[in-house]
Image (cartoon, rainbow, N blue to C red; front, side):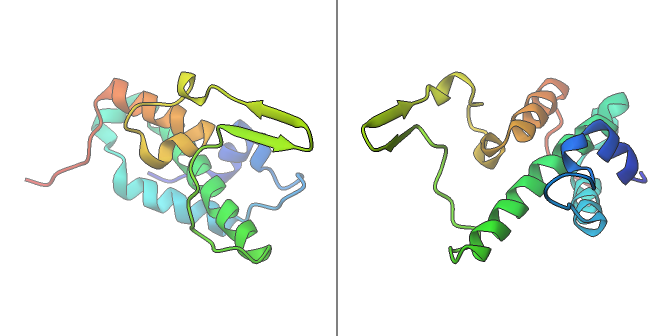
Length: 132
């Protein structure tokens, strides 16, 4: 399948070239290639293009977060999990993250795109592809 980067940017304008951050075509193409290797075409059927876009968006967010962390002097790739509370001065905010997390979702819970992708994958029953 040929991934259409322009269509991806149209469907997900937050990754367009006109935003505050420039998401390179090469970054998008890299994750599209990874998706090609991992998504089962038969299982996804007509939803393959949308599933691929969600997969790409999820992985771009994770990659860019790691890049931002490294730029700020942190350790790229270091996971801290989903934030459940935050405080500043005398103000404290807690969020009920369990209401939106997917069970046994691993890193797919770290982005909105990942959760959408996983919900679709589970509905379609698209586990890993196995060559027989």
